Image (cartoon, rainbow, N blue to C red):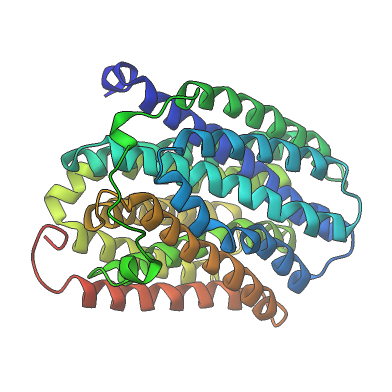
Amino acid sequence: MAMSIFNQRWLLMVLLNSGLVQAAVYVVRPMVTYRAADLGADATLIGAIGATFALAPLFFSIQIGRVVDKGRAGLAMFIGAVLLSISSTALIFADQIYLLVLAMPFLGIGHLLTMVGGQTMIANRSNDGKLEKHFGLLTFYASMGHGVGPFIGGILADDGGPRINTEAAITFAVALMILAIFTTLPLFGGLIKKAEKTQHTGKVTVRQVMAVPQFKSAIFVASAITAVVDVLLIFLPLLGRELGFSTTEIGVLLAVRAFSSMAVRVILQSLTKALGMKNLLLGGSLVTMLSCLALVQFQDFWGIAVIMLISGFAMGIGQPATMAWVSRISSSDTKGLAIAIRLTANRFGQVTMPAMAGLVAGAGLSGVFVMLAALQAVSIAVTTSALKKSGPEGD
């Protein structure tokens, strides 16, 4: 596997970019939670601040998808990495809640640019038989970032006292984002790969893409698992603070979940062939649902660590599987738009679910995890309905 990656320079750069960007973002977002709490924000306001990360991208994702479909995936990744670096640097100095609210949308737009660019590049340059493998690798590197980032960030932020050193952790994230800029340079450089040039017969509308059979179901399932991971990222630090965990311990818990997701993504293609996409998605959603309910019952570090280990494996299935699902059912000249719509749905979930979680948390944090379990129950029903029949996507 390693040799095939190194033989495909573009794929290696996309994977490295994914790992660096996700590591950096997963350092910054928990630190923003801590910063907001230190500035006096309650759980409801923290949920709203978390939602701003996804709010602005909702207005730009479709346009980004259309631009990327013109062969500018690498340029989108470059601009996204630059924007991430600038917005994260601003967060180091943000000492008012309104400054956090202003910086987070730019962080979200930068993240969206890198994701649409990278995913579209893989969708266009991979043959159909390698979609699960390449998207599995993409999300594997993302999970590596999700694990390494919070782990190191938590250590840097932990001064051993009551104060949380968010500045040190976010500075580390900025360094990662600057490295991510360099990974994008070989991917655009003024050149557009032939594999990304498509002949458009006319402007395809969002409605036409949404009308593709199974498309709405695929993006709902994707957004449901994204919402679970996102709310967990925002509210696990609050749960940890309530239970007396240190920032290092919270970083370890987030790292365990991420590394467990990495494990399943390495073998995703083999699992898909053995179980079929339908059974794989259903199993992942079921285990995620039960894990969310289990979080309500456990209050000790090691018990929650076991839950993170099990749930991480289950949570790691949804994203790469739905990426391959969306790519496979989309036409060659609309993959960028289809991926952008999928990410728009994800962002919508990231706007609404943290905000709803913040309201629910006002009555107790346990309600947040029950809400996430209910969302996964709906995802199970949608998957079952969409993939009733056997076929290329349902086997």
